[in-house]
Amino acid sequence: RFRGQVTLDGPSGTGKSSVARAVAARLGAAYLDTGAMYRAATVAVIDAGVDPDDADAVARVVAGARIEVGTAAGVEQVEVDGADVAERIRGAEVTRNVSAVSAVPAVRRQLVDQQRALVASADAVVVEGRDIGTVVLPDATLKVYLTAAPEVRAQRRAGQLGIGDPAEVAALAADLRRRDEYDSSRADSPLRPAADAVVVDSTDLDREAVVDRVVDLALSSV
Ligand code: C5P
Image (cartoon, rainbow, N blue to C red):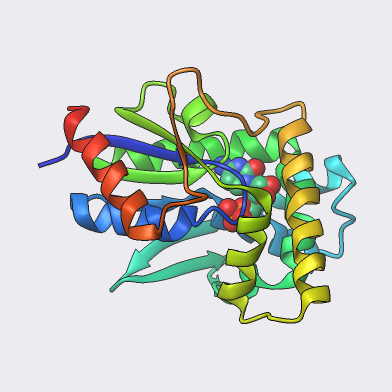
């Protein structure tokens, strides 16, 4: 059976989360969604009434917030100071502001420490995010970088949200592009593949094929 860490990084809309969950289930591994942690931090910032672009204020709010993520009976649990925010973190307001919050170095240090502690408590784990292979777990057993053509990513995200109107799909595509540019160009831990990551392009692969490929890579990496 698999023991070790699989990192799954890449831009939004690649199907990273559903692939990561399925790979974790197949490997009998724990699953950690680090994007959910940055989203939960963003809920704390919004509720504190702080400007997400005010880095000092953001750092202060997040330092005082207790952020917890986990899975119970297959359902993702996300809490801020004991309040359930699992639904709220997927909303438009959080999505719009999460890149600014996650660009603050003090926020990253705090959440990366927390991520490493969570990983250390599991003998097998799949961790998804943007900087897991490059920064959080540079010695991971297997690093995967998942990409797909931008139009395909926008279509998949639209499908998930049940959006069919072309103007809305175009707005979604613009939002994905904006977030990817922000995440890729920030000074601290920008989105990019680790030098030793296996790049998997899912443009022409369905989810099952991507899951099979990552599971095969994981099993042959130990
Ligand atoms: O993966 P998800 O879309 O939930 O991530 C939301 C945002 O959180 C990303 O756009 C990125 O700004 C941030 N993030 C990050 N580092 C991670 C995971 C997510 O900066 N490891």
